Amino acid sequence: MRSSNPVFSRRGFSRDNGSAGFNAQQQAGGPAVGTNPYAQGTADPYAQGAGNPYATNPYAPQSTQYGAPAPARTGGMTMDDVVTRTAMTLGTVVIGAVLAWTLLPVSPTSYGLAIGAALVAFVLAIVQSFKRTPSPALIIGYAAFEGVFLGVISEMFNAQWSGAPFQAVLGTMAVSGATLFMYKQRWIRVTARYARIGMTIAIAFVVVMAVNLLLSVFGAVDDGGLRSFGPLGAVVGILAILIGCFFLTLDFKQIEDGVAYGAPREESWLAAFGLTMSLVWIYLEMLRLVAIFSGDD
Image (cartoon, rainbow, N blue to C red):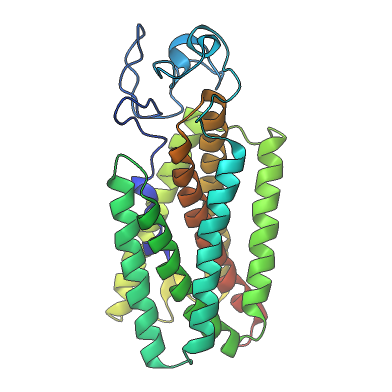
């Protein structure tokens, strides 16, 4: 369910209270920089000088101010920070899902609770997306309510297609791992053009899905239209998973740049937030895809 993943509000690391980030409007002694975290005026994502979004950070070492990115400063975001925060958010999702699966039986009431949890998660995600600084409480709250939604939905799918959630988890891990491998091998390069094209496709996809949902609700299309459990639904599901992988690459890029440029440590919460939303997107689409290919509706 995409409503719990507000990708259009996604941003890079923010500038707030003197902490530099990808949304910096102007670098010290350099030209103005827009809000696009990838528009650094050069093909090199680790451009020096004005290309460093953390060049104005008063805590940054001199080598970061005038040369290539220096090792992470004290108090700066590290990969360990990102891993720890992501483990916390994903762990919260898993705990919420397990509790919902265990305590809520498959019923219309449970389905209503799942929709309610998804709406709360959506609101929390939107609020966090518009905040200038990361809020751990909002992010953990989003993960908890998203977990409840996933638990109920997974139980319902499992009742109809036994083992589907387990297969979807394995599929999500495989797809995410493959995406990370291709990114680390630089088979995928996140550039401004790549981000623009990908966002255009993602926006168009969500708009079309929203229209399809409205048509389905009012009975203008049969069997869910583009989101049916037939061959067309499978094609749409595969496209949705590819879009989820696209957002994962943006997350990887933000994390890589944040560590390289010495982003404030608290920004690791934003990285965990983005990764969690992307993985939830992929899991839900993978769950539908497993059900479609099970061919037992």
